[in-house]
Image (tube, rainbow over all chains, first blue to last red; front, side, top):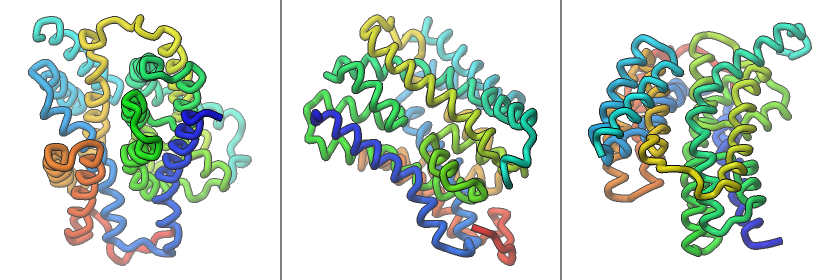
Length: 98
Length: 246
């Protein structure tokens, strides 16, 4: 088997480890401490924010407009609505702003 | 709760409920799958290898980083370590979602963790938060289309190669941040949401500028989680006396 094959296999194992690892650690405890539970409840907002924030920093007016519209759309519509609204604004703005 | 207890009809409807929620994810990730396939060929992967990594790793950002390093002939262990680093945030997802799917049989759990991506976690977590049971059939309906399209579109991208037109004009490079912002907004009713978002944003930007990518994800996430841990639990809406099954 080629080196590439082994890289892919090792990457797959490492990735699966990250996807099951947190559960394996947590399941060793019979009770979840309230502070730990508070921390776990913070996970979605905390992690997903880090996938957006640096992108915002390096973006331009077209991207910012798209994000503002996405945020506004989220106050009324569902996930699909806000995603399509944001994407439409992005594509439209990019036609005019480099 | 046994799956057998659910009648066939309602199991099917649960599955399709999941499928419906997967649609925006499929739309948002589609261009990336094709882009990844094209990049993979560009950087020296065969079509089969592109297929294999999408099927086995199933993590868009990490695959992009991996293929980039591969193209630069970086040492294999460093490529694997980088993919691991980009995917490290899943440890937090895994710890969080474990509470919701602990009632599944082990094989189902093992499969469930395999398809635990960003949107999979966010949508399942939102369902649990609404007080609804996160069932395996529903979870599979949500994750399976994303997985199948991810793999198929990787192969299409690999076969089409450079035929993908001007990706910038189509806004492909910025679709994911838009989608992730949508997911972040979906959790805005949670206690401490704004402080957590503010701290994670600041920390990830700071880390991005100093330590660099991909560590800004883990560092920023831990900063936000730490805030919730440090503040008295009542701020997070967690009752100290409450007991929880693991």
